[in-house]
Amino acid sequence: MGALIAMLVVLGVAVPLGASKEQLSTRECENLGFTGLALCSDCNSLAEYVKDQELVSDCRKCCTEDSDDSISKVTYSGAILEVCMRKLVFYPEIVGFIEEEKDRFPSVKVQYIFNSPPKLILLDDADEHKETIRIDNWKREHILQFLQGKVKRASAI
Image: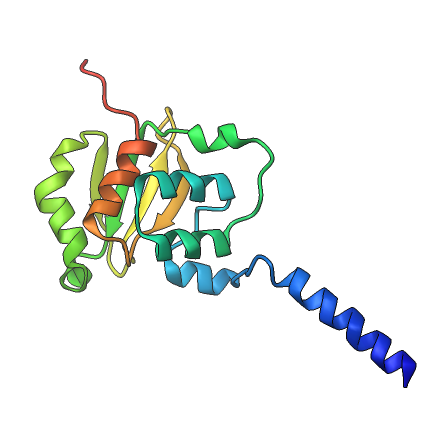
């Protein structure tokens, strides 16, 4: 009986410690749109630009700790907003961004790919894909704020 009580005490202590940072499965994170945000410093950056606490909380449930916070300062030379034209009717926030805000970001291109969920593909200086982020549930202002912080302004050539 004493061993059982000791085991329950150990379990009682271990469970809260393990539950201090709730983690979601990869599938759950992908469904929330966090396929490319792997580092928690990216969630900190997201929190600076997006004032939606639920979105930031979901991000933190899908991230892994990183030791160097300078990674959150990474910016990209451009981005591709990829979406299926037939599915746009289900994403009025993304339609609003494309129609009314996209021109503010000359280094962001819109690409219509059949059956593609809405996502941002972030590009390096060589136009290579570096990070992909699903944006299904993002509001227009979230897209704006994220691009303002993560994508370099195109220089006039």
